[in-house]
Length: 152
Image 1 (cartoon, one colour):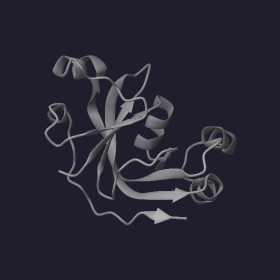
Image 2 (cartoon, helix red, strand yellow):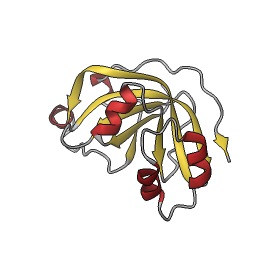
Image 3 (cartoon, one colour):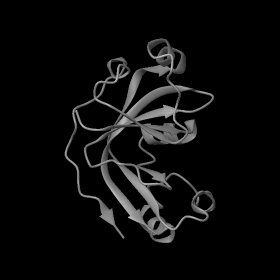
Image 4 (cartoon, one colour):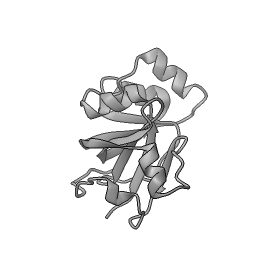
């Protein structure tokens, strides 16, 4: 199994990713992911559950202005929202969605903590090892093909 990244995402954006209207996840810091890695989506409050995931297509790195020019039709946010998010950042990152899936049953925070009492959802993101005891609760697809990191 390749690397698994657990991202905390607001429910509005979680739904947009899983319904295919948002095809890139924006970040201020670069997560250690490569094409084909798995991203699990933890929908933050009020949902508080892992609801699905996607395979990484590519990682785009650019200045915030350059990134916006490339991803504005994929980002699922308005330009004022985007500008507010990247205020003060010299570089922005976008993780493209290669293949997405929605879990038939979300895995709630309560269920995650019953399996691992020390589980705490990440503020932004966290990495799960291949032997993590939470992974059997989820249906993860095999890694698919990816493309190289794109840099501006």
